Image 1 (cartoon, rainbow, N blue to C red):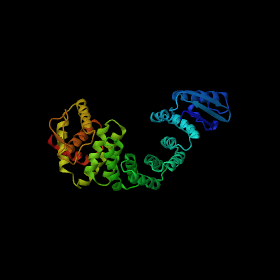
Image 2 (cartoon, helix red, strand yellow):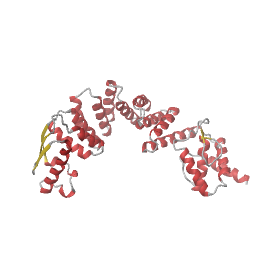
Image 3 (cartoon, one colour):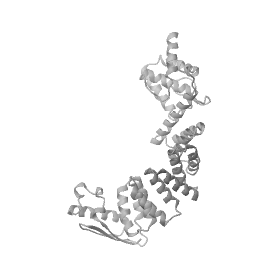
Image 4 (cartoon, rainbow, N blue to C red):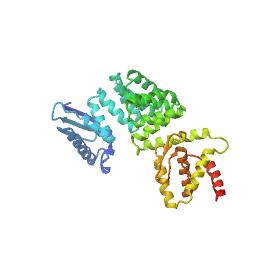
Amino acid sequence: MAALAFSIASTAFDVNLLPEASRAPGTSAFREAVSAFLQAEFRDFGGHAEIRVDDQTIKVSWDADSKDANPLPPIIQKLHQGRHAEGIQLLEMLLTHRPQDAVILYNLGVALSDVGRLERAEQCLRRALTIQPSDTNIAVALGVALGRMGRQDEAIAVLRTAVRRDGKNPWAQRNLGGLLLQTGKAEESISHYEAATRLLPDDQIAWLGLADACRLAKRTKDAEAAYRRAVEINPHSDLAEQARAGSNTLAQSSYDKAREVVVRQDVLHYCLDALQRLSPMPLAELQKLSLELAMAGRNGFEVHNPASRYRVKGLNGEFSGLAMVCFLYVAMQRIAPGTDIGFDVRHEYEAAKRLFAGQR
């Protein structure tokens, strides 16, 4: 792609890329701003660009430094940097010169899909797939765009075909798993998420999706393991917070299922022990302990696995996950009564308070 020439309508240019005072087509300010923008962009590509802007059209002629020069890689880099409006505008321009270029159509379709311009994204991706019908990545991008449009059945059909064609494509597996999960097919989605995690063992989205699917399919142990892995990959991300929330929901659900109509005696015992240990503590020390407890449970306490043990500096001994939840609950009730820690032991706590009062 050593030389390139194209012409687009002035009204087809994204004025949001220009200074606010230069956004009216037909004005000298618009012409100057468009010319300056394109000169700067094509300077990055190497070579020389001649740009002419009038009231109706924008014309660009570009002579590259070498016959191998190609503006597409730096444009794609802009998209990876989050500069979508800029990248989309340049891709739309390149497309007028190379309307049958599947690579341009694919990257333009993905970028348009990411910014919510879904109808135009579908057009580009379907054209790209017509040109390159065996390209799994194009099919995946089309499936994602259709899913974002709420056309889940069409999206699933496209992604099923992509998986049949290339079962080792992790994006096809992960996105098919996601759409199946969205449409209530949690059990079926698991195999696709599992395939995605094998292909991309550090993909946090795939592990979180697998965890959610296993939780909804009542595969508790698998869900716990997947939530833990999702948190481990990047503990400080938003996805890790979602994984922690899912783990807490799982633990609460398991606890609710196990609890009887009467107060659970093991939880009552842990709450009473917590009251006995924590009541003498000054408030500042209690606040410090509550932070330690929260940090110890940042990946979720395994409340239904007595073999899992935890320690914190502020408490002597080693405790089960269920005991740690009770310690945290009791601590927070003293610091801020009524606090919801995401795990309901209030009945046992109230019973423990009555017993504790009778011991004093």
